[in-house]
Length: 489
Image (cartoon, rainbow, N blue to C red; front, side):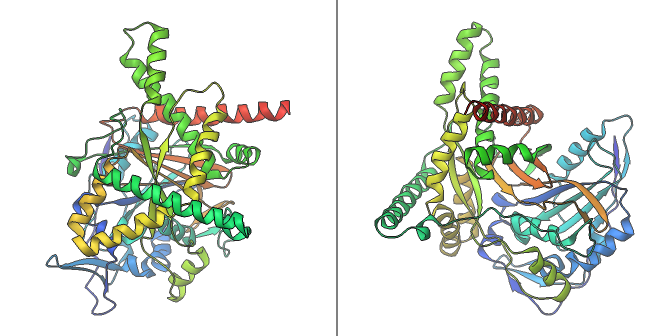
């Protein structure tokens, strides 16, 4: 398996105006403890036309302020974005691929994993695109976007990618993104019930704040096989895999259980994590009797503290039309890193009724939804940066996150087929790496599909495809339980 990559020259000369200081959160993402990147693997149905793709970049991404600015450090005292002349071809990489009888899917995973060890060239705007003439099991060719997290949060970046696409049914029309209604219960009720909800909001926020402080100081997750060691993080090579499932199955469960898509995905993740860890612990106890081993690992699951950082967008999502106008007309819209997170405790167990996972998840997430925890974590990070500086704030934030086990996010994509610069898309698999977690789960909907992306530390999770199998099997068993319940009612 050989790769020959040709990187071209620098982006151009620095501009003399349009300088803009980095936001506190963007500065955090440039710290050594949080040198984070966002990636997106996009499968397309046709061969990629490099010239057409480069022209498309020049008409869209290159016109975005963050994609045409370099990050400048002023002797470590100040960081700012400085506008520069961008040559799109300098950011497009077309490797020469020689498979030599290697599996194409495995080659893609290895290629993306190798990218996690290569930093971006800081003399250019912090993004690049890889165009792979590689036919995999689910795409004719593959596009890989690699963007530094200081440029923007994952939701903003994926919204920007969607703003670069057009419907295949109408090449002049932007895609429409479905939106789950976020209803504010406190505004829909009045009198004493509303007062009670407000009291619960304050109480839940206080409880979450105390748990957040405790996590920063001493409260750690159980040292399971999913926990990684990030003391040697500079040399970390992360493994990125993905699996596509039927989005209609998730919507069926959502409607039957009167939940949101995100609630269902959390329930599926909890069931899969339970199965995965039960197997890993069971393998260590094979010397015991089969029944005794299963009983021991099942009891062990209940004693495990395993929490996920649920990434939350704390502002209304910028619409694709606004982003398209920004690139086409130079208009302004909200941009940056506006994400908080909630500490979500998974309740690991093996249930005879798989729907029990959904019930336990919903009981927890309903309290989280009636809390200001996400806003609290976002605000506290900004305050820490201003009071302690980026280095100390990054150290504290890294300590908090490393005391948990994983990250979790869910992004909404177009409900109809779209094309990126004339190339019809088959799937979108976004992910992120650079933060101190050995496991990151991203879910991305597109048409009638849901793509599960896993970013794992292979020294902790050596079999990510098995975890994908567990996620797929958990979804299947929960769907079967929902259908069985419906048939008996």
